[in-house]
Image 1 (tube, one colour):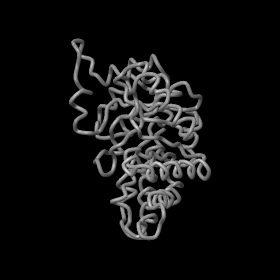
Image 2 (image 1 turned 90 degrees about the horizontal axis):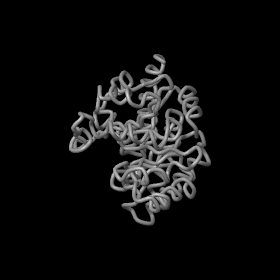
Image 3 (image 1 turned 30 degrees about the horizontal axis):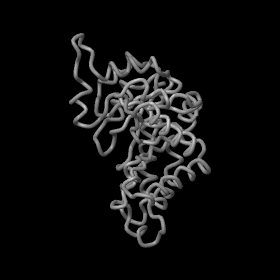
Length: 274
């Protein structure tokens, strides 16, 4: 999916919501464990069917699937296949935070872009150019590079300054533009960073930003939009726990749909500003 197609879908659905599929076997409704052969996939399928009208992307977090071993990986594979076959307009991001020496990154890229047919992959930038460029050689695929994250520990390294006063996340933004462009590279910027979006937009005005941290983590959608939205929206805002775990009962999917619809309506109001 290219940048224009992504923006067209945002306009059509009046949404830039990404639903995070952080599916934890210990948190899904208990009846699925008793009734389903593959409860992880059954949960994902129900969440997808319920929320697809209100979002433009899904982001499965690989850690939640890898923690289940082979069963988890198979559930992940089935989830991606289900999305590709039934919801081809959805942008699928693997939240895997890969990034290693070049030949290893090339294998990761082959896994997620050739074998799994995903649209995008989160990548850690701190091993430099040769660890990132193998992911950039696929037409229509995206690298989502970690820039300024929403966790408390982000301040440990990402905000440190060099002798010229340039912060580390700013160096990542500037340097990485030598490797990719706004047609194949996005950046992770946490919703809790507030007005820091202004500084980011000075460096990457046209790139899409993947924004985790609204909902359970307390980030403000209105603030993210005020400081981070550009002329093509430029935002994919993720919500995971606040949607998928809103209801532990057998009505979990209907509740997830309602939560996603509430966020979509807020987003539609923000898109009127474009």
